[in-house]
Amino acid sequence: MSQGKTAGQGAAAKELRISFTLNGEPATLEVSPSERLLDILRYRLGLPGTKEGCAEGECGACTVLLDGLPVDSCLVPAYQVRGRRVETIEALDPADMAHYHARGMTQCGACTPGVVVTATWIVRHPELLETHSIRELMAGNLCRCTGYDGIIEGVEDELKERGRAAGPGAHRS
Ligand code: FES
Ligand code: FES
Image 1 (tube, rainbow, N blue to C red):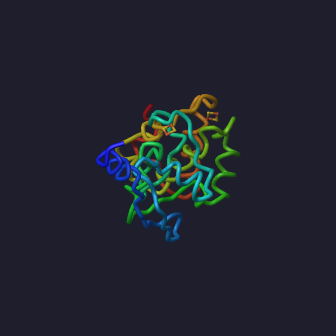
Image 2 (image 1 turned 45 degrees about the vertical axis):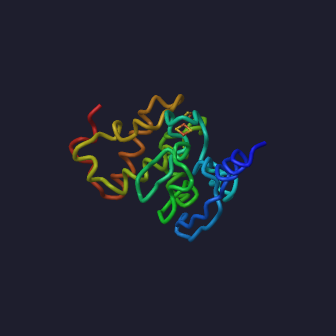
Image 3 (image 1 turned 90 degrees about the vertical axis):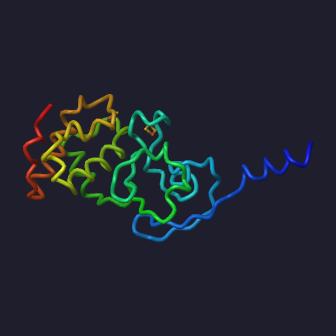
């Protein structure tokens, strides 16, 4: 094996040290360039609530909040969260999950963590509903069970319960 090839392989495997805020707490770890945010959450940081479905940015099962915005953690290289703020389903209020379950937003549960993370983003930002419907904002989260109506109604109810107007775009289909 040539010297050059060995050096190149070493560079590819180099670990990067990153620090970021995870669910309100500081986190620091070494990551390889190929690790995804989803991997470090589930397998290195003890947060298995974020699920893997398609692994290619289609289903939304792996949704987390990055600096307050929903992202597919299967598409985010772990090193890109350096200095940023990550929130997972584990950080959200368990009471919210119970509310959503009671409202029929969950059936098999495969999509539920991602759905609830996106729903949380909408409930935190009702101004989004001035220009988008709940259905549009939830379009990145696929669900095979509910037909989506239960999800949409669950978000509407949560907005009402918190005294937040759903806005003119909320009911557009
Ligand atoms: S697992 Fe990430 S979008 Fe499907
Ligand atoms: S509840 Fe089964 S996929 Fe959504």
